[in-house]
Length: 111
Image 1 (cartoon, one colour):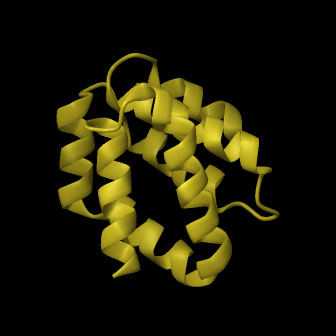
Image 2: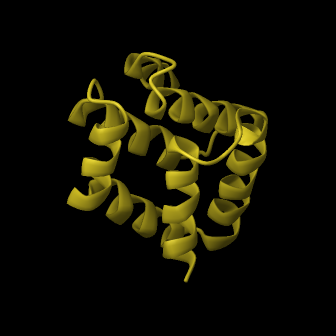
């Protein structure tokens, strides 16, 4: 299903996606969001707010806070949607936060 695809793409940012493909994977999520509309929003919220996914994020980077997850959700779902290059950059930063390569407060600048 689309929700499982989205969840696996989000996990890939934290673990398996090579850094040079962060923007490409972000573009895939952008297109999924564009074509799925409110269904995407529902999937995204359910995934990011699930205890299972939060535990995954906290395992990847113990410095991530609930507040960071909230900012990330809001940035991704805000209307009107951000331009594709900025959307890709947001997901690239998300990947770097998951991998402890960047401070989680960088996600706040997209709000």
